[in-house]
Image (tube, rainbow, N blue to C red; front, side, top):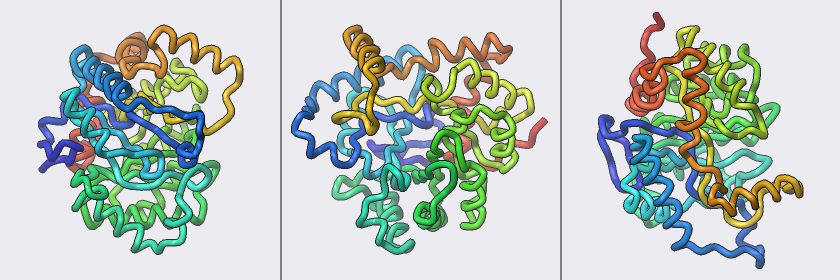
Length: 332
């Protein structure tokens, strides 16, 4: 049993400590037409390598999953270069973003079978002409509900999962529609434990989290540090509740951070936000570093009574089981 990374297949025992939802580089469609945008690729690669090396050396992370949607600037060759130079296992995905902020016009017009065919090709043959194979399928839906068009792409993901056996990683907008994603996967015949329902920590309601874990999927507390959506103290409270209720084996922790962003953000930034970013950039702290989960969030979990074993099993045992496709362990 192995997992495809951008540098080739690795055994499950090589995954090690894993961040399940991070990004190296993001570029929203249309940014390539902005004449004010510049991108220094060698400088970006050097900075990404520095950050991933730090993550590996200081915090023991061996695998970095980058579920960048196809149309958000996914660049498999760039990922491979960074992975080789940082000695980090990097897993990329196939799959598109959600309707409001993605789904290219061309692919909106394709049939479910055509979309699934693309996904299957990228998993089994490789992305474009790179030969680099996707190791998972990305699915994304908006808020407050899944649109009719998004349902077509969910159906295609189910077909591709059946054909290839790789797992599904999702985006939910602000923690909406996770249970509805689960229902769509069930309808498509995909076992719940093959799916990671992402960004659930964007929803503050413990009852929502309970619905997701009761549905049998993995649950993503994978926007740790994204304080625009939720304070991390609340994320820590809600995560610890799930652990105490016996759902430790279903929790995935990550941050949804990026190292490089092409052009401006896909929303208008306030002057206050810009000033804060500029100040952090001057200190070499923007974009925020990937190490935050270990330096800031893990201590919050320890303050709330979690042990090292409980914390690090969520970063090591859970990703390995997820990629292996093993059933969830029985709750004690």
